[in-house]
Amino acid sequence: MTNNEIVLLVNECLAGKRESYSLIIRCFQHKIFALCFHFMGTSPDAEDAAMEVFIKAYRKLKGYNPQYAFSTWLFKIAVNHCIGLLRRQKREKEYLDTQRSNPARTIEANSPEVIFFKDTRQTALENAVNSLPVKYRTALILKYQQDLSYRQISEIMEIPVNTVGSLILRGKKELREVLK
Amino acid sequence: MYAMYLDGETGPETKQEIETHLESCARCKEQVRQLEAENTRLKKTFSVSPGPALDLVPGVMEKLADDREKIIPVRRYRWVLATAASFLLVVFLLVYFIINKRSSPTPPEQPGEKQVILCTARVEGRSVQTHIYKSDEPDIQFIWLEKEE
Image (cartoon, rainbow over all chains, first blue to last red; front, side, top):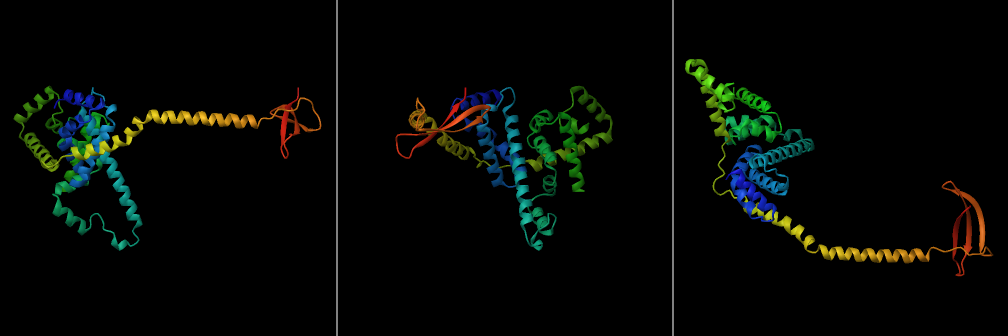
């Protein structure tokens, strides 16, 4: 579907034809799910996050500027939503960690239990990717999963184009070091 | 530079220069081959196949319908709500004026037994005299503040 076709559907939605939005969802749902999956880590969480992204996007539809690609606008919402969810999860984890009264019950991130479950579930590279800082991971996902250009990534992450190149290079460097 | 070349982020001239150089430099060619393999592995890692079963449409549309139901009753009955609000406003204003009228006594035209001058005070920079009046109704007195000319 071309961006012009999507803009027509967006206008129909804004005119009250909500059914047109289902076509937009069908067009992007696999990409948004895949993007969310690498932030959230599990299919059910990715599905929930992707649904929330589409709901958020619908509510913000009036703010979409048709001069820009709809996909870039939607990815921006998705990335910000996932980063927000990760931050919330991190805060909740920190809170739960501080609430644990018995230190013997806490499981360290690199404890044998965690490593065992990680290694049985994921490849070494997946583990390494998940351990990357969010900004590196975001840049790598947008480049190597969504196949976006540096310019599109810069618009989504709201950073200069040169910085995108640096993030991708540094992200790959960190991956190499982790995998050594 | 080779990473950007592989990501398709170099201009046509630079791309041509790199390709010409790679034809004659085995070391750089090997470097590019390794970077290309790294990119392929990354793409493989990031590839997700949620399967044909993934359909977010029903869930999203149901949620959006819930939103609509929450908004529509207000829209549908907005004229009723507006009329009711206007009616309540008119009633409130009527009650307010009636009460105000009843509680705003006028001083007697001629000072007499019913009036006691208490003192002269300054209110907001102006001299005022405080009077106490007895009304004809039993147990009702009121205070009247009069500005001194």
